[in-house]
Length: 202
Image (cartoon, rainbow, N blue to C red; front, side, top):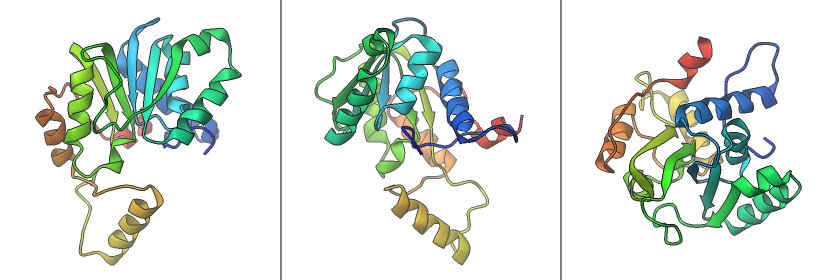
């Protein structure tokens, strides 16, 4: 996986690295930010997507993760990059369900790169993002959801879900509408939502 733990689409002749980059560039585009705009990465891991967004936009991005080792590793990777990147990449140990060390209404945009899946009630972390964003700030969230074809009575589906939850350290996976409702409950208005796989087919 390298420094990014997420999926992406790619052309047939492209490799995994391109798939990862394509997803990060897609999120960067949706954030609609520019040089030194303040962006929040909720659940940043070791910072792969964060650095991808910085490369694509020049934004000033702060990532939070509950894992101290991940912050140390992210800082280690960033220390070997250019001064341009170092100036724009920041990492903090924070629980994204209760962020204590960041200023309210400070960020221009925020994103989740498949990172909200670790909590069952995603409303809690979405409320934190809403609180930390400036009024009118933009949220971009790549989410794990159940599609209409999910059948809880199908043993194959159940086994695939078990492996997903265990392998990704994930909590209960909501339906699309359940997830949208958690985002609305946090205070956001839904500008658009879609199946990312369908974007890949385009």
